[in-house]
Amino acid sequence: MKNKERDCARRLRGNGWSVRSIANKIKCSKSTISNWVRDIPLTDEQIEKLKSNQDRGRAKAANHRNAPKQVWAKIRARAFESAQREIHRKHSLYALKIVGAALYWGEGYKSGRCTVSFSNSDPGMIVLIMEFFRKICKVSEDKFRGALHIHPHLDVDKAKRYWSKISGIPIKQFHKSQISVSKASKNKKDSLPFGTFSIYISDTLLRAKIDGWIKGVEKW
Image 1: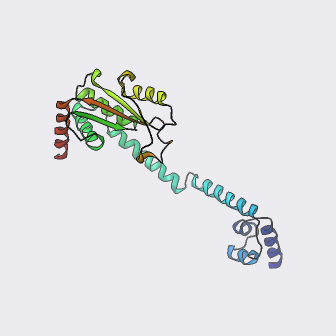
Image 2: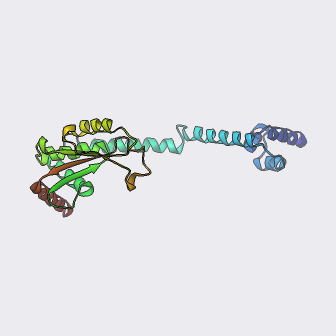
Image 3: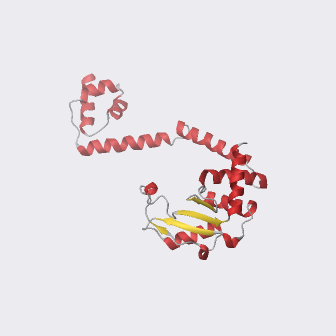
């Protein structure tokens, strides 16, 4: 009986079967199958096919609804949705002042005394900081200036229209675009299809206020 199983195992191995598949087929342990077929070489094509089958098997197992990956994905999704509901859509102006000051503290331009400037590639951050500038800082629309920093192979006009819509700043109030590859983003040529957007406000008193709010947040 063992000889028959051994012959079958060697034949299947010659046809490119994996040790695991042969063991499942003839109901033997993988270690036994491995000993029986270890002298049978596989072609490059058979090896590549085995790798592909293993990858498909792993992907299928990972996507099963009871797989750890899927279970944790559901847990994370519930935590995300619950946390999102904790932040009320209609937040108070005081909360917006704290959030805006903290955001500027982390991402805003802090050199000099006369310019308020904020740069980012995340449209959500641009929307939030513009709400801060408009509702808390009371900046008039004609004082806003925008600027685009973008890689040379990307569509500059499309990016301008995109950031104008996100920020609400008319394109006619944009400075000249900076078209170059920065050291920080040279390996991210296609991860920022609309480049980075900068907001400028020339206002010495506003800059002093924002610095004061940041110091207040720092001592909170």
